[in-house]
Picture 1 (tube, one colour):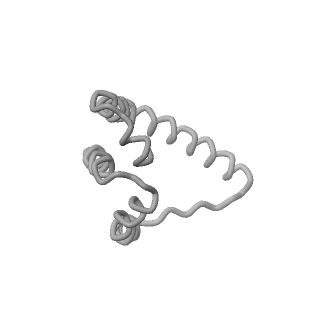
Picture 2 (cartoon, rainbow, N blue to C red):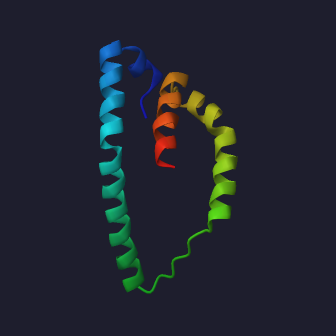
Amino acid sequence: MISQAFWSGLTPALKTLVTDLWAANIAIYRANLAAVQDKAEVALRAHNVRLVSPGPEDLAEQRDKMLLEQDRVAHEMNISPDMLARVMDVAAAYN
């Protein structure tokens, strides 16, 4: 996330560059995170840790609850409404 103060100081061209770079690389970021999670799961299971994953209904319920707080949290973190909208647009393409 980028603070409102930082974002406001960027030129329109730099704002476009930041969002375009993020959009171009998010798949790589997600793949890297998935690989790290897989490695961690193997390590945990090797130590006899039992892992439980919530079902789709539980995930959807929690997501809906979190989305109700999203604007407030973004405001508290000084994330601009424009940046939040851009993030949500890109995230929607992957969800």
